[in-house]
Amino acid sequence: MNFIDKRIENYAIQKSNTPSTLCNELGEYTKENHPLGRMVCGDLVASTLGFLIKSHGVKNILEIGTFTGYSALAMAEALPEDGSVITIDKNKKINKFAKSYWDRSDHGPKIEAVFGEAIKVIPELAEEEKTFDMVFIDADKRNYINYLKQTLPLLSEKGIIIVDNVLWSARVVDGMEGDEEDKSTVYLKEFNDYVENQVNLYATLLPLRDGIFLIQKA
Image 1 (cartoon, rainbow, N blue to C red):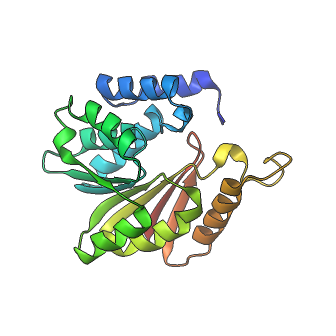
Image 2 (tube, rainbow, N blue to C red; image 1 turned 120 degrees about the vertical axis):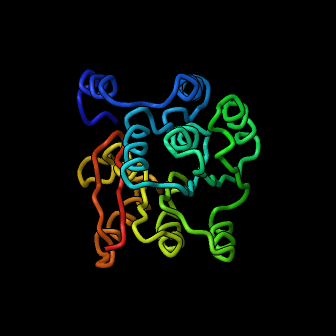
């Protein structure tokens, strides 16, 4: 769902720093050929991620939900040369596709794909005493609260968590979800309410594309 006029959004994208031509090619291919292509985070979200990476001096990123690799590549492009992205997904086939694009980029070596259920992989990263300056959550909605709980202890001192799709085409807003709530709507409502009630967090929900939550320890 577009919350603003598409012409305004396009103008904003035109005036913003956006990912590379290669990254854009990956995004467009995904939109045109994948049944869930609309789930690519898009240029404006990618530009926002890049701004946060550069302004916060981010070096180490954990991504939960690789999809076709667009956001991982966009974030890698914004990182310094010694930066890294660990991206988790259980779909090896789609990660093979993502790697075909990462391998064409000078920033591809910054990306490490980890295969498996994120809910099981994250504790393994904790055991390895990994810390992250940024966490980007864009995976199965029913585990959003679990992912948040698991990754908060892995944040560096000024680390930030960005959670995508939290407005879910406005279906999380009472009276705008249509005749029937799907399960993801229920999960996202629960997640948004959970974040709102955590006194140990400072959070801002932005109506950017499908909604992103910016979360930091208070």
